[in-house]
Length: 128
Image (tube, rainbow, N blue to C red; front, side, top):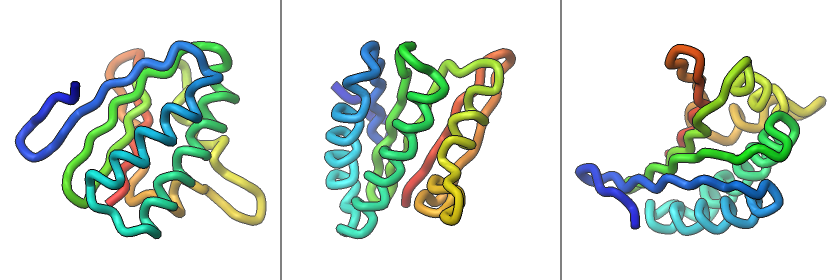
């Protein structure tokens, strides 16, 4: 059950089997985008972000679990990939860069940041 903080809902997901990450995140982000009342073109952008994020996490994390926090508010969906170490957030972001296209995350998300807390970091992506 999602936690509610004012008008924002928070959903924490731990995906232990990376083979399930794509299916789980596509469905969660689709539902979150609908809940946030995104127009269709923004839902497509959200799913493009999921594709880039899956590619990046697969190439960087391999068979390790994915710790993701999703925040949902009217007109806004946030994805936070937590518990990253040793430059993993930067590597995931770099994996979203395609030749002749550029940074997929930067081109489709509203903001993409890396937050650090000591030895841990998080990749934070916001669509609004």
